[in-house]
Every structure is written in C-alpha cells, then in structure tokens.
Amino acid sequence: GFFSCVTFDIASNASMVYVTQSPRGAKGSFFYNLGTGGPADRNFVVAEDNSPLVFHDKEFIAADSFKGSPNRDNVYVTWTVFRFDPSCEGGTPDVPAFCRSPIFGSMSTDHGFTWSTPEEISGTNPALCFTGNLFDPSRPAGECNNDQGSDPTVLPNGDLVVPFNNANTALDNPNLQQLAVRCSPSGDSAAGTAHLNCAPPTKVGDDVITNEPVCDFGRGPEECIPGPWIRTNDFPRSTTHTRNGHVYV
Image 1 (spheres, one colour):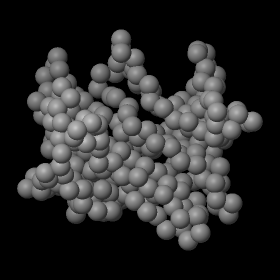
Image 2 (cartoon, helix red, strand yellow):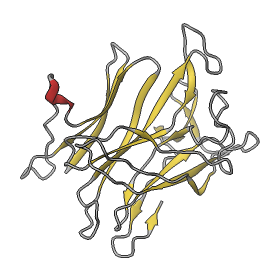
Image 3 (tube, one colour):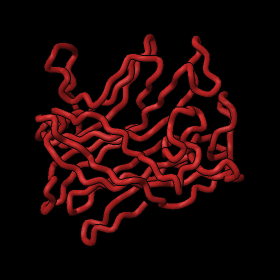
Image 4 (cartoon, helix red, strand yellow):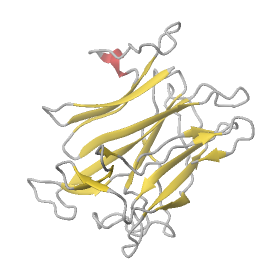
C-alpha cells in the first residue's frame, strides 16, 4: 500500500509532496519510511520547493493493479501547484499575486522509491478554457491552468485518466467545469525516462455553483453544508470499472 501527503513549514516557504509505503505485512496499518536527512532521503519525495512563489497542495494517488496492464505496479500522484509572482494581476514586489494553479503529475515504476520529474498535465484547450491568461498575461489564453482537486484513476490497458475541477470558463459564465486528461505513461522513473504523456483536456461536465450554500469561516463566503458548518468543495472523484474499463466521475 501507498500513502501520499503534502507537507509545509509554517516558519518558512517550504512545501513538498511525498509518498510512503506500508511495509510488507503491515497491510496499511502504518507507513514509515520517509528519511530525516542525507542523499538517500530523496527516495519517496515527489516534489519540493522553498519559495514564496510556489505552493504544493491537494495530492491524490493511484496505483496500477490490473494483472494484464503493461504498467502494473506503477504508482501515480497528481496535485495542484499554486504559482505566484509580483508581475501577476494585483502583485507588488513585496506581495506576489496569484498567477495560476495547474495540475501536475509524477509516476514511480519502483514502488515509490523514485519519481519522475513533475509534469504540468492540465494542458491547453482553447475550446474549453478561455481565461488562461486572466491573472498572468504572459500565459496562452487557452491554458486550463486554474485548477484544483485532481483524482487519478487507472485503466486496464495501463493508461491513466485524471479528472479535475477547472475555473477557466468564460467571464460571462458564473459556473465552473470538470475536465479530464488521458495519459499513456511510459519509461522508468529510476532511469529518469518516465513520462505521463497526457493528451489535451476534454470536458467531463458542468460544475454548477450558482446559488450553492456558503458559509463564512473567517475568509469570506465558502461552499459548505449549512447548519453543521462543514466546508465542502467541487472536486471530482473517479473510479474505473474493473471488468469493462469504463471510467466514472
């Protein structure tokens, strides 16, 4: 079994994504193999930064357990990378502003020990994403880069499908959308040749947020379950039918 996590340091700008194993025989009851220092402790680390301009968040994980898959036992992690810069809309040299939050992905072919170089996988589709340069004019207008909540699922043939929530809808559209990319992973993470090879995103469905319940938890109105005041989100959940390979989101 595998466990993925994001971690950040409240005293610095450091944040990271890592994956640990459950030791054989533990059957997921505990996970304990992330080191505390030294060159060998690059094992299990997917991505890390120590910058006020980058923040890693909302990681999700999937493993290929299909017996006939050419990628059996591969492990995949997808997550959101928030990027900030003084040059983006509203930014100043002292207070960098939000630029974009694309979905990134990485894969391991050796049970989580090594990970491929993180790749931006949320892609570009001008027919679906109209505001990719809203906060950062240097970006292409068709980028699908205002994302959160990716949820990878594996297909029996070894491919990977990654749905995610996207906010690059037209300015006159009050709602959001759910998109997905399909990837054909290849290569070896230990050898540095692993890549996800993702196609441009397609549309899963509309995310209607108009008139949704909201609560103020101290940061302004946020989607919630009123009454018990439970914060919620619009992030997709996905699964693959093990017999026919159909994907459900």
